[in-house]
Length: 322
Figure 1: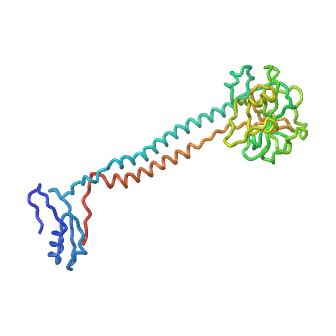
Figure 2: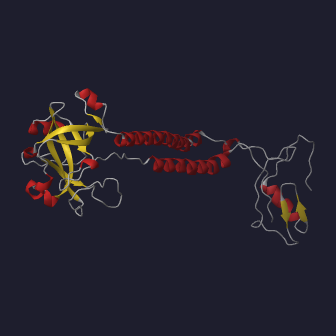
């Protein structure tokens, strides 16, 4: 039988000696605080006995294996969940900033119109705000930008913003016309709105070609960037794929200033106003879910696969039934 000599003594049970002793006691049920061999009154063979050398201290608890500590690679892999957590938090701040910017632009476009300033510097401060101007159009220098999809003013499912033109054709062009401002004494560019392709020729929409002095409300636009892979403008053929204010200014003789006619200033029989797009790309919520989800998943994998298996704290070995 096994015995302990002193509380601080350590007993090393080798696999060979334990096997010999177990075979001798095969007719009994042998129990040990950490190893239980239930022979059920049948002789044991070498194949049926599985054990390993375990070092015990006086208290009966297994000592920690120094080889099971978390190494440098384990801590290096911890960077993944921590970095994903940081990126998710950063996206939270980005989403807050983007929502504030969208709200600011919406407030600007919905504010009451103001008189158009004289200087270009003052006009820059009014970007995406409505201004009121009075003057005359020069329809002989119309420019057409497109193809463009129509923006339905104030409606997500239909409507044509008060124009007499049918808007069943979803793609068309924006009509850019020089406009001489009487009060400011300058000529600017005015995006009168959207027209379908079949009305691109001014002769097909004579009712919408405003003559004489008129007053309109428009949204100030200071710039428009060329989208990636978009074709370049063909000035000679009057084909414009995006609004290049400087090029348009050289062709028409107007100042490089453009306003989009508001929906309430749409001329019956003319282009559909209210084509200003003020929506900004806001996909930060998807990024937040992605980064936080990745942080949780990789954090759990690190805990179960590295920390739990290689932690220095060991538990009592499992009881084996033989």
